[in-house]
Length: 355
Picture 1 (tube, rainbow, N blue to C red):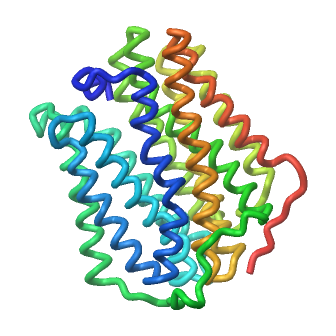
Picture 2: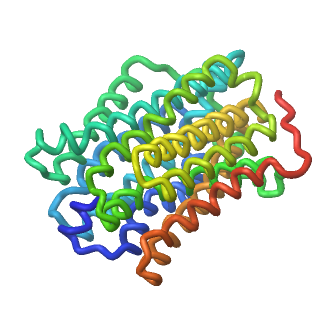
């Protein structure tokens, strides 16, 4: 991000908009993804979405150009928006008796991908591509293209209802939809805004040597708890007290990072990653457990619309507050608010009735 920031002369608000743009598109286009699943099936929709991610993700660096970067980021976000409602739907189709375990498995795959890119880009990928952030986008699009090939060649559709019978519009009166959307929004704000602003924050406070390890641990910190969910996700999914504890852990981690400016502070970043990853597994596991198979995609789309919409607002506010106050610390206020929202999601009585 500092390299892109320098080359394209972006303000902090523009940095927040750029990192939040795919999230906004995922919010806006998630329902379109649900409609596509209803029409062509989850597997085919997944292939279409991943193909968009691979092509447009690689094209973000063409130029370099601010216009190309933003336009291709929008299209890449559409690809992710199509792909994400497909994942819980496919879990329900292929693993109806092991939903918690299967959710933990695919989320672990997602987190490993995030961790590898965050940990390897600066020390290894950038030197390999001659310090070109543009070509680093191409490099990380190659595994996505491989995923498209694997899905096309080796996976088969298990379940599909025709568009005339399948529902795709979320039920906005569903209290569970809103509860899960708000909880996931809080966790996503904490994760995405931290990834976006920790590099510039450390650069502005004279600690650029801590950027790479901080980005690595916020993703590496997700892995132990995510792997742990392989063993008990089925048992704890739907328990509201879990979200309270996760929010408290995230707040503790952010406090360590801000007020203990050394390697213990970096350990605090790992706690943020751990809490947000656990939250994601719990939310995604609830979706196919709490809905009939033909309703999973539109419940997922509704939750993603709410959560990603809130995440974009949080990211953008972080940049706006930094620009307005000229204080790097101000960027962390929306992150703290997101953690409070995550913990607050446990307040009140609610129950998931699995089907």
